[in-house]
Length: 154
Image 1 (tube, rainbow, N blue to C red):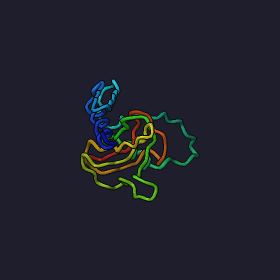
Image 2: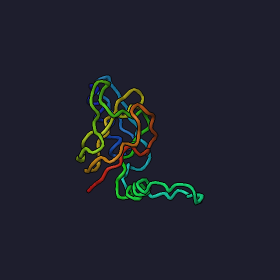
Image 3: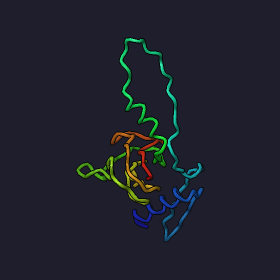
Image 4: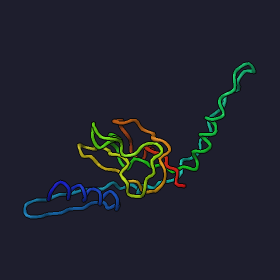
C-alpha cells in the first residue's frame, strides 16, 4: 500500500464517519480509527450581539460600516476545520494561496491544508460560492470545528 492509498483511506474514514477500518495485505496491516463525532455540517454563522456601552454625548459615533458587516455575516456560510492541526493557505512556501478573498469556489475545490500529526490533509469545500473572508492566519493552529472561511453562496 503506497502513501496515496493511505491518504485516500484516511479521507474515506473521515468523510464517511466510519468508526474504524482495518486492512491487511501480504504482511502489511493498517488500522485507522475515525472520530466518533457527528459529520461536519456547514451552516450560516450565528449572529452574536455584542453589549454596547453608552457613549458620552461628546464621543464620536462609531462607523456604520462595522455594524453593517456584522449584520451581513448572517447570510454567509462558514467553512469549518474538520480536524485539529496547523492551517496552511498555500500548498508550499513558494506557492500561491489555494483561495483568496473574492475567489469563486465550487464544491470539491481545495481551499487549504491542515497538517495533523505530520500528515498534510487537503481540505475541500463542501459548498459553492465566493470567498468573503479568510478567518485564520497562515501557519496558525486550528481546533476542530473552528471557522476558517466565510463564503457567500449567492
